[in-house]
Length: 310
Image (tube, rainbow, N blue to C red; front, side, top):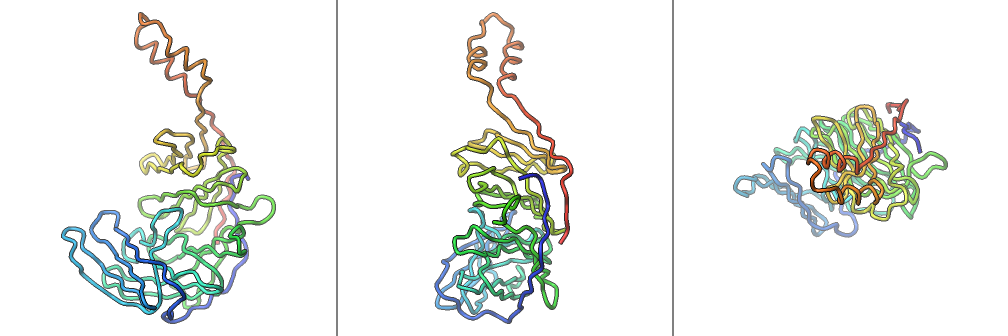
């Protein structure tokens, strides 16, 4: 799979009023703002959902609201999601049900409903733009979850249309696999998700939540690894470098300005041993230079990354 951006067909979406109770209960959840100033407690029970905003400084309940239907805090690749970058909107998703999915957008100050979307099909939350104007969802097209599409909706449109940003599970170059972990830029304008590649080449799925386009970046040096589930992503917002790490050690980096990948590989064991066996009377500077040579970096220039808007 090469670095690419893909745009596919549009799919009509039906907008409904407040959702009715859905089958089952997804369980209580909570989500805290990045600065810790507030926590939102979400508790579905008996066909309704109670949302409470708690002040971070003294844990005092500020606002409580009850909604019809069962909603929960979205979780993607083990990461709690739903708050916009500007902190003004909270997105919740309904408990998955056959052929129907619901999402509700709340004003974080008053917890009043800003918008409710009812979608035909099986969907789950993926991301939301910093101002809440675009909601990204995963539409599952197969029962086993291997064929699915990332779609974007304009939440401010009177008749939203979901446009497929990247369709997964297609033959050839299409993305497939399981989401392992993710991270975002501080303002939420970019979301980076690491996928296992479905036994092929692992990759990072980079989503521009503002401009609604996506780029897939192959991580060839991770192919065949059996420890993918413990890898982590860390973004340095000053340098725009996205690091793939294992137990704190960097195994690959991506320059998010141009999607250039640098694969970090350990040097042969013989070189490591040579560094460890260096004579003690060699100046420390020379030993340091030998140690630096223990790690070799290979830069893979991924040129011509196409950015297609939906």
